[in-house]
Image 1 (cartoon, rainbow, N blue to C red):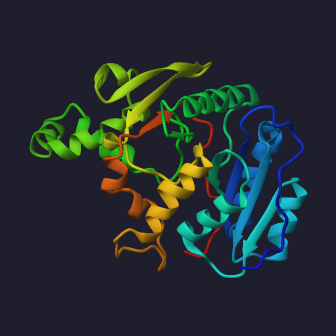
Image 2: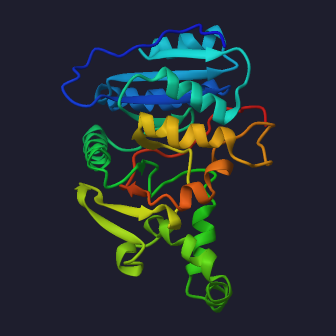
Length: 284
């Protein structure tokens, strides 16, 4: 792996456990530029002690774009895939806690809301109440989010939905953690699966869901850096799976397994800050 960029903590004070933002990027500089503009417009990066981009199939133009926005960067000449790219990104980060996004995850909330959600999320992680936080918007999760449609087909009010729930009870139960994306009061609909935390922001409450009822996602997540490297990356590298994406492990296949479901972990779910929006083309 060859690095053309630079890394290191920024200039903000480390009065508390440090927090960083890591961005994984492969091709599609237009989407990355769009996301970075959204962060700059709301001064989002001032909330982090370190912001770093890792580029798979890096180019000088990639690093120039990161530098234009005052963001440190590193990369590899070859495509490392999603798992390899996230591993390299996690290793490049130096902070205690990390927010991880891909290059097509722009911010859609203002600075005050972002600050409130990130600070509340860090409190939940520090307390051990949750092990990971989803920061993808509940109201506008963006493109390529078909889990909501699966939930609606299973938990709708139609006879078809009723029959699906009756004959596929395990699957229906596993989807209950998606309720915050759909229901006005998900904790009332599923009081045993969707729990209220003591944290909230101006947009609304922050939920927590046992990993038995909510899948792992690579999209816009926050956790302890050590947890990410030891419980996610190290496990996924050795998971006994055969499915690949473009020939590579992608984390979501490996993590959506008994390792994720049976570890007594909880996912925090605030109202969310980021959507998923591709602007350019990756080539597939």
